[in-house]
Image 1 (spheres, rainbow, N blue to C red):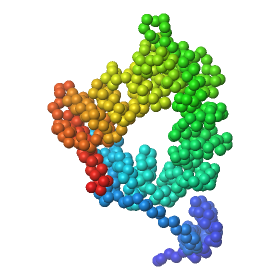
Image 2 (image 1 turned 90 degrees about the vertical axis):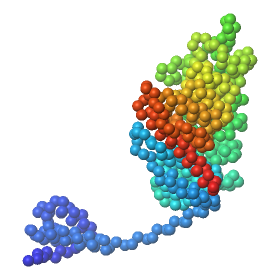
Image 3 (image 1 turned 180 degrees about the vertical axis):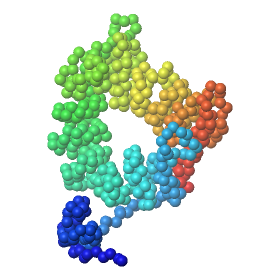
Image 4 (image 1 turned 60 degrees about the vertical axis):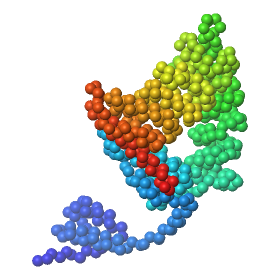
Amino acid sequence: MMRTSAPVEAPGPGAWEELVTTALLGTDRRALPAGVPGSRAPSALLDAAAVDTVRRRAGLRAAPALERPEPAPEDPRPALPEAAARRLSMLLADRPGVAGGGRRGTAPDLMELLPQWLAMANAHGYAAPPETLPALLDAARARTDLRPAALAFAGPRALWLARLNPDWRFALRAAPGGSAALPGPEDTDRIRQLWEEGLFAERVALLAAIRSRRPAAARELLAATWATERAEDRLMFLDSLRTGLGPDDEPFLEQALTDRSRNVRATAAELLSALPGSALAARMAERAAACVAVDPLRGTPTLVVEAPHACDPGMERDGVVPKAPAGRGERSWWLGQLLEAAPLGTWSARLGGRTPQEIVALPVADDWQGELHAAWCRAAVRQKDAQWARALLGTPAAPEAGGPGAVSLAERAKLLGTLGAAERAGWVAGFISAHGLSEAFQLLGVCAVPWAAPLGRAVVDALNIARDAGSYPWSFSGVMGLAERCLDPAEANRLDGLLAVPDEPEDASPGAGGYWAEAFQRLVTTLRLRSAMAEELRGG
């Protein structure tokens, strides 16, 4: 016989919590509001909950419709050629493989080619296909190095999408003005409003954009609110003056030397020391010159060094940090800062009219050579002095290729950055020819892409020598990866002879020959793919 439950009145508004409490405690410990007794209470509780659920759902009022978003802005740039659009979809669909030390095989790493593809597409001025924008923004979200090129390619529609999806908010932070284009140089009211009312990221972007076009206007904008800015903001704003730095910035930077923030003072001093004609540079030159001289009493001209015995208030005001790092002597720490900030033109007059090459070649007494030359390296980089950089680099074939002053690979890489692209590539090619690839990775990273022909040949020849010698192949994977992205695609045909598995010497690493064949096959395939990418973007 079918059991029937006693009718239960629907609970009134606000009674849902009572039902929940009764269910949690049990009907034997808490009676239903309707007073249903005994064994029928559990069924009555469920009936009441069902009735209240229907009542609550049926009683919902429709919410007012949201305002429809404005249509995405038009992108006036020309559309991608069809073949290039298909290639972009392939590059965006590729995902990095599982991390590990296994072989990569012969397939190109498509995600590593995406930055190069974006650079070429932007150079042609193409607009991104709308259907690729979500994947493009996802890729830029995952890789910050992609963001500038990806957002430039995505154009105004990227900002429209970013306002609709919180995952892509980075695009609003990266774009000047966030949701709007930067005001033009004549629109002073909008510039002032954005500068005074905008978010910090918007203000940084605005200042950088104005600085790149009108350095003086950017400096005046910053000066107008300088006294009211937070210390960490002043530091970021001051850093923007590196662009277009010139003598007209000196009065403002001299004023910043008295800032209450030590980091702001240090940055102002660094910028002033990059202006060889500044008053700070002259003060540093006087201090540094008092520390270094040629000893006239020695048979061979020798540099002698007398490091400062104290860090006085004037030195501190000019950016010298008084407290040395752990493990560093105070006097050598102060000396390095003075030498780094002094104009390099100081030394020829101070040291008998000698050229930078002659100065660097002089012996240095009392083990001061490392400190002296390392400081001159930093000065050459800061002042972008190619003549001193050449002297400190020395010849690439020198023992250890360190030159007399370059104390580390990082230092050599920075010095190379002061040279022109062709000279830089030639020096690194000479380094590789003389010393192989074991220390070349960091130096290759500062060379222009695609690599100049002499540099590309030097890299390929060194890889071939390593292969023939049976060298441990995985130690060259980093250089091989760089070659895939940086070698001129025209070199592909020259590499066909390296695709066969070589005979392995008796002392070779097991399986090295097969690895080398795979790596060269991947290199050739990648170069030909890069060539195809360029042709597709040309509309060929």
